[in-house]
Length: 293
Ligand code: FAD
Image 1 (cartoon, protein in one colour):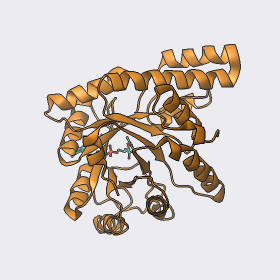
Image 2: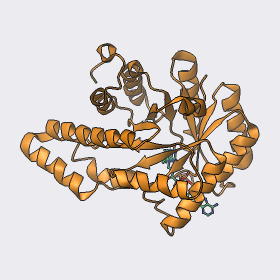
Image 3: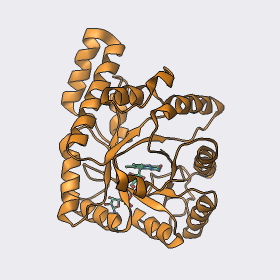
Image 4: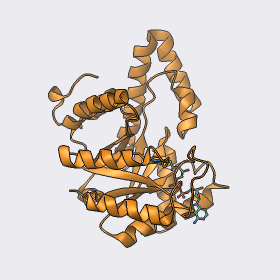
């Protein structure tokens, strides 16, 4: 098993994020995506978590399955919402017993379970719990434009700095402007924090997905919407996909040139955009063995 803190100490990491399938159809899609992305040799993969009663076991099943049936190094996400402190401690212990050494400690998005308890108010408390249990490399979320619920950017940066003092690394919400990432890293440096902050990459590959991006975490900027609309007018959906991959690749290049410690791809359980960007960046070790999906 591999601790992400050790990987980051050794050099840049390139990682992929997945969500656990909720149906047989989603399972088929994910299995195919994993087959296609494994040949790219990601440094690690991460699996999201929902705190709902039916969904909470799925993350653990998927990361444990990956650990035992593939060469992938998995990280489990875990959230404060919907759990008591004791439940969170039990989940962390069972992850460790299953051999999982990487956890992303999160506040969590609200669940649809109205009875959900919430004993830990903020992710930093989950970092402390995971640290007390021991044996984990611990990551946290960072929000380049500030967390949407934060009253102001300064207090959000202060809380992030406090989290990062205790955690090993951060992964950002996706963003589209290099300066947002550089601003966040500079703000951490100004607070004496130099832990690795992995930029989260979300290629926008269809016109349809543009409004969804704002709901998912970050609005697509005007200049990018115009560039994609231009591609659409000239060549339809294929041209939009190509332009979206091109723009994401440019951002990745600029991030690496600026010293980012790696790249974290939000795959949405699809392989194509991530594979295309990998290819353009020259990161893929042997694409001839990867599929086409
Ligand atoms: P926190 O660090 O708790 O911050 C939340 C808010 O509280 C911020 O405004 C912060 O400034 C403020 N705050 C923090 N500490 C304090 C304090 N001590 N006192 C007062 N205010 C404080 N969600 C899921 O449900 N499942 C997932 O698997 C998931 N994966 C994610 C992966 C990544 C890489 C990212 C970036 C986000 C992910 N999310 C996931 C979304 C995340 O749970 C939400 O953005 C959530 O609203 C905030 O999470 P956080 O860990 O940043 O919370």
